[in-house]
Image (cartoon, rainbow, N blue to C red; front, side, top):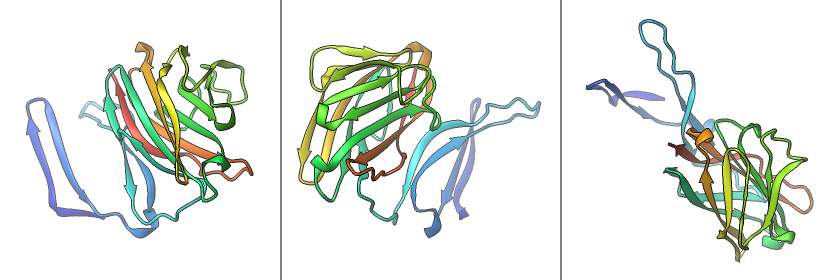
Length: 209
C-alpha cells in the first residue's frame, strides 16, 4: 500500500528524487528484489535495473534456511560477504550453500558458486552458467590462492567457514571484474544432505563500478 502522506517528489539538478511510503501486506512477506526503471518524454528507457532488496517480516522459518548476509548492500571493486545459513539439525546437516550474484536468478555471465561443506571447497561456475559443470575452478576454504571467471575472482585467502550453534557462517572475499559493472543482487540458497532446500533468497545488493 502506497501512502501519499509521507511520500514526496523533489527535483535536484538533473535528478528526480521520488520518496514513496510503502506498507507491505502480510501475503507479500519474505525476501524481495527492488527493481527500478525510468522513461523520458522521448520514450528513452533505462530498462529494469535491480537496485536493492527488502525483507517483509513474517515469512515462515524454513530448515535449511538463509539467515542473513552482511553487508546487505555494497559498492566497489571488492567485498567480503558474511553469509549465515541455519539448519535445525545443526551445520553438519547442511550439504551445499549456493551464492549467485547477478541481476536475476540466472547463472549465465554471473558470479555463481557452490560451497560444498564436507569438502570445505568452493566451486565457481563458468561463464556459461551450468551448475553441473564444466567449472571455472574449485578451491578449498580457507587456503591460499584464487579462482576466477570473467565476472569475479574468489580470494580464498580472505575467506573462512565456521560453525556456531545451528548456524554455518562463511566469509567469502570477492573481487569484481570490469565486465561485471552495474547493479547486482546477491541470492543465497542452502541445501541439506537429505535434499531439503531453502530456495533462492535475495539478501543483498552490489554495485560494481
